[in-house]
Image 1 (tube, rainbow, N blue to C red):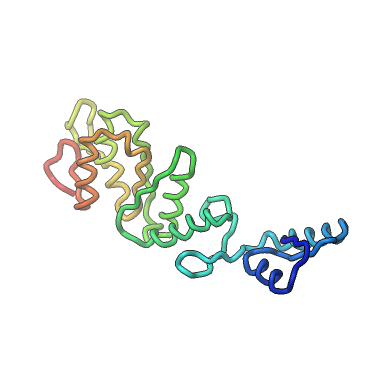
Image 2: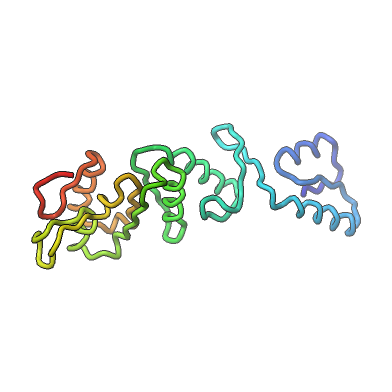
Length: 197
């Protein structure tokens, strides 16, 4: 609601155009104010159109692929997800811990043409360094002690879907180089294998 000490029709129209549900002129009674707030609250659950940088109106809801929020900042995040989801290239998601990077990855996957494929998530900080390469790229039987059978890694399991690598900065630099090669070429080699896949 917009409240003014002495308003004009032009101010009222301008306020409503910028998102105000109603425009009230002072003085007004508490009863009238309560009635107008009640009327505005009834329409609050409807999605509000927000004009994005692209110039297109997008409906903002409280339920966008698991996200909560309908501020302009969140609308910008939703718009960016809509734009990158169809892309085939890697997407780099940044943010402080707890800001919803995995929710963002899930939303990108759900809105992509890979949504029927698997979404494989790996927390790079939770896996010991000496096991990380095997977890990511898989291994063949006999590659190391305890490798009793061939096993695909997360990258191979995510084929046709999405691979989400959380806390990638915790990954060993030598392994990041191998990961870069995989991202660039789309091929990988399991630990102990001579064959590229």
